[in-house]
Picture 1: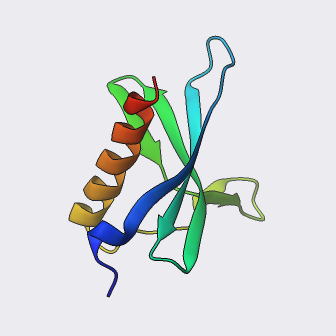
Picture 2: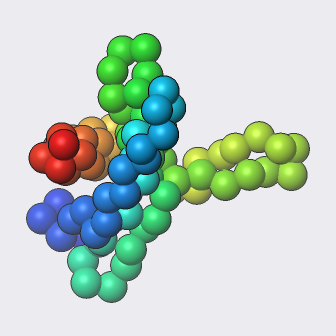
Length: 89
């Protein structure tokens, strides 16, 4: 099982487009053998949130391609990404 200390932000790319709700793309490193690309920092109605990596379906809609194993793990990933985003401000 992967421990939380093995999850790190591998890359954070800020989107500089004025007025865009999309603020950054983020890649996470899990351990020393896996990188998950495509997390997004988005400005929503209630503030910043983290969008999971997604891919288009045959119906043209977008679907999450990565799923945290629990609500707590999703919260941990979100906190890690948002903390990294705010540090680089």
